[in-house]
Length: 316
Image (cartoon, rainbow, N blue to C red):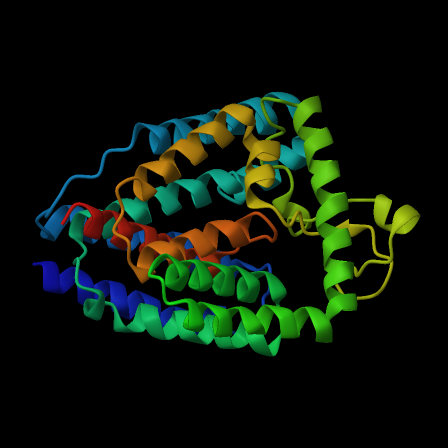
């Protein structure tokens, strides 16, 4: 029965390639494929598959519970009628997305295999993702991957390999220092805006942001720095992606949820094998600190299975 799930999972990932790997659009197809596909995997797994192991994570349950409660708090009692209608028409925005993310992690952990070779499509998509990051000069993924790779070889006392792996960072800084400075400005100002919002609303503001493409208003770009608009790449824009998933989730659902997310992630990392997969997951978390990652379904469809497999191999 385990083979049936692996076939379904690889098929789900394979179909996602033409959907997700077109230029990113905040549209119904790219968002609904993730949610409906995960719900389909979950339903099939409950009806016809035998669980190999049981997934229980109280912190994931708390995150799902608070995100569900926020629907009624922020979208029903606080929002006006138009926002209520739009939020509920979109399955209450982020709640269904978070729920499906947790269900995806659950089914991969409960029915997946601890053998990395059983996920060929996942590694293929990950390779496409890395190549795309290089082509588009997306520095955050590249730098995160290089950093953890250097640490991996350094811990094994393979210093020569670690040195040559570090060279791409130095070359990148020398060749693209100005673009990296612009991106650094982006992270500085958006983090300031997010932190101010978090302290103003420590219990979160609800999922009231996806209707405008998950961008935040940041007039500091216009006042203090030359930055690129997140929507059309024109200069001096004041609408920009949050560029920090941890602060973003705290802004949406509050500081308690951020704490639960961190503890839940530590649950997977604690006791994990000292192997490339663990360092890959750490790279994903590093990247999540400096760019919008988990909020995009084309990233979640890759990274959630990685953490599920990490948990399986930790306990194998």
